[in-house]
Image 1 (tube, one colour):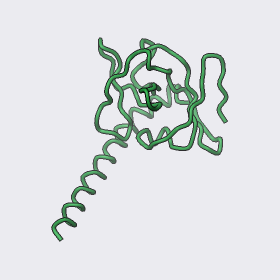
Image 2 (cartoon, helix red, strand yellow):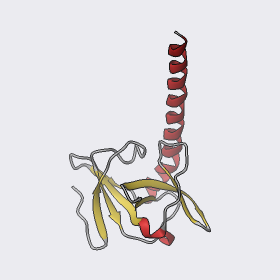
Image 3 (tube, rainbow, N blue to C red):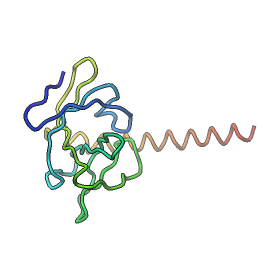
Amino acid sequence: MLRAGPGEVVIPTRGTCMRPFIWPGGTLLVRRCGPDDLAVGDIAVWFDGARMLSHRVVARTPAGVVTRGDWLAQLDESFAPEQLVGVAVAFAFARGLGFRLDTRAARAWSRVAAPSARAAALARTVVARAVQSVRARG
């Protein structure tokens, strides 16, 4: 079970685009921060007006941060600084077991696992389209 301290919030997780680091049905511990505090490899959390999103920072530009879900090939649309809730620092599964996301080891692992997850997602998409094409031909 994650407990928020000063300047932190706990939010539920949904979706699958951040596996293997974040799974649906769990919770994220989010530390409030500004856009300038985000580094490549961090998981930014923001509110887009309809839902909370948590995706990895993959680049920094003069215009702001660039994010993408670990299982996704496409980059996210940028978000306004006032939409930023903070940076995810820990994740817990529904049963309470969890881990830190803000350690040096977690950031190093993300540089290996995130590209592999995207490659696997791309391969699944290609196979699914091929199967769909074969089925359409009869």
